[in-house]
Image (cartoon, rainbow, N blue to C red; front, side, top):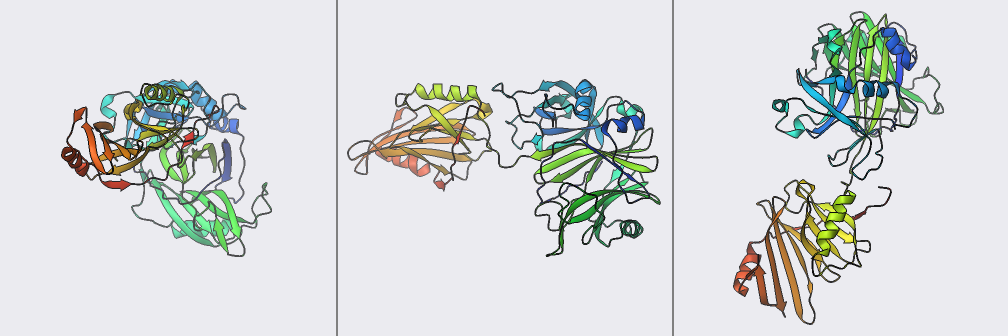
Length: 484
């Protein structure tokens, strides 16, 4: 099944909630439905489809959106009760087998994790249900082949449902004019634009209609002092057209509508991840994206109306600092203290991730709380190895080459007219060369490479072949606090 790629450039406020909305197929008014009534109305106890967040084979989670001690959440409770039964994940046009590994609430430091967040860094865990591929043959060769939200279903779901084929237009296509005209008549407004998103099972059409101007019949909300804009999520079944209202903001002075910050006046469409004909009618699993949020849920079309169940609105975390866990910090401090030039009175407290050799794997640059001294570590597979140490007088700078090598140079005055230089060359996140030399008034007096003494000419030759492209970084050292 094809998936439409949404390129939204807006920002949405984070809401961790569970909502249900209903609208009649032939009326303009929306009809709210209680959470528990949806399943009762469907007269079905089969667990509903859910959304798994995938970053790599080791990071496959149904991420929780509520804390364990919060007010009970009907949909999160449902997946917790049935966690082991979610055994199928939609990959392209086929279902592949997954298996339940367990539940996680605590990070590696043993502290609670905040729910409702989708991280972009695999080293940052989330609370939720953990899964893995049941068969190694199904593991994608590239992690980014599956990156993001994926649809998962309970093993019993397709016993009472028929999966419907979904087809997305290859280029932006408006909704049929007859549908647009009917929505204009229903809401008494002029449409600015429409978009057909999905053709479902050769029968249904799903898309959006966006109107011009203020929606004067908007229902009262907490922010009713603001003028409202209106867009619709629309599902058409022949002459029956179902619509769900999405309220935005209307600026009377500029005559513009907005639903997300920086959306340039265009409502971002909702994406259908899976379509099914159920015992009572059409069931659609959807996701709605914005740069800072991802909202997931279900649409149900039956008995002449449409119901929406919103599971969660996740906060998409942007520009996060990767974490260092307590045991990793302790390991780095231990490696540092083994060195003769270590300063025990200045424990390493701050850190910054830096990819010195540009191989996609970060190294770690650490300093004490006052940034007087520091140390650098390789961090492949999150196992630290010491590169070198900064002192009050000898500070690090970095170079790269075009052959995927990088270097750390730690240099400074060594007393009197002497000057000390250490060069550590990295490739593949490993130190491949360790070089040191002393200079007196600009003349090389001593040099060593990987434990072997060099002449001053050999030292100069090594420096000439070392990475030479200056790599400047704007460094902000992050300090791990007790509450982190």
